[in-house]
Length: 405
Ligand code: GLN
Image 1 (spheres, rainbow, N blue to C red):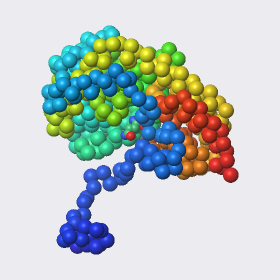
Image 2: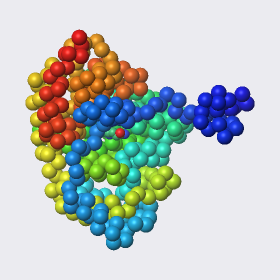
Image 3: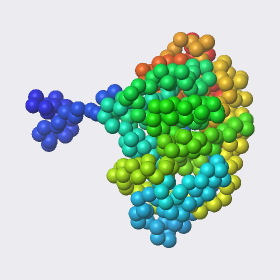
Image 4: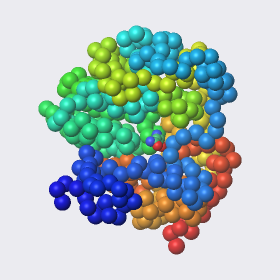
C-alpha cells in the first residue's frame, strides 16, 4: 500500500483526498483518558458526575470580577514567558506563609497552563531517551505519556495495597543505573494518601544516594483533612535542590477551566524548565495571571480550603456509611476511594459504567491508574460537589447490591 491506507480513504468521507497516510502512533497503547470517557457516559446517562475531578460550584465572584476587570482594561496580549512578576511575587509570599520557605520570584517560579503542562515540561527538561523514571502506582494518567514521548521508560512501583503509602524498599529495589527521575504526588490522586515526614526523609535519602531528580505533583496542597499538614518537597533541603514542584490554581480556587498552574524549582532546574515551556505554550493566559496576583493577596482565599472540603468529605462519608462499600476516610484531595471486592467479582470498569447507567452516579475505576490495568476492585468518587448532589448520590449508592443480581 506504499504507506497509504486505501481502505480508510474509501470508507471515509474525505474522498477528495487521494491518499491518507498511515500514522505510526507514538503512543499506541494510549486511548482517550478515563476522565473524558466517564464524563461522557455520565452526561449520556444524565448521571450525577462524581468521576472527573472538578468542582461542581462556581469560583468566588471576586475572582471572576477580577478577570473581567483585567480583560476590560488591557492585559489581553502576551504575558512574559515565565509569567507576570506580580503573580510570581505573590507565590513567593504564599510559600513563605505556608511553608516558611524562601523562593526567588525572578529565577525559580514559572507560570504555566496547568499542572499537567508543568509535569510534562519538567519531565522533558531532565529525561533523555533510554532513561528510566519511577512512577508510583496507582498514578495520574499524564505521567506515563510524558515519559514515553521523551523516549524514556516508566518503571511502575506499586504503593502499599492497603493504605497507598510508598513502599521504600520496593522503590529502592527498582532503581538502576538508568534511573533519572521519580514522580511523586501528595496528597495523592486517587487514594488521598498524605506523605509523612518519614516518606520525605526516605525520598531524600534515595535522591541523595542515586542522584535522582524529582517531579512533585502537589496540586491538592491545600486540601488535607483531620488536622493534617501538607509537607511540600520544598521543605526538605536535599529535595529542594533536585525537585520540580508542580501546582495548580484550578484545584485551589475552583477554576480548573482556566488551566493555570506553576512550577517552582531551583534556578539550575528552572533554566531548563523554561527552555521547554517557551516552546510548549510560550506563555500563559494573561488576564488570569493579573486576577490571581490580586486575589492571592488575601490568605483566607486558600487557607480555608481544607475546612471547606472537610465538610463535604464528612457529609459524603456519612452517606457512604449507609452503603455496602468499604472505605477509609480520605486524608487529602477531593477524592474518596471505596472497595467492593467483598460484594462482587465484577471488574471495576464494568461496575463504574453500570453504576453510571443504572444508579446514575458516575465514578472512576481505579484500575485505570495502573499501566497493566490491575483491578483491586476500587472505585474513586469526587466529592467537590454541592451538598444536595452528594446526599442524593450516596442515597442512590445504597442500592449498589441491585447491580450484582
Ligand atoms: N485531575 C482530574 C482527575 O483526577 C482530571 C483531569 C483530567 O480530566 N485530565 O479527575
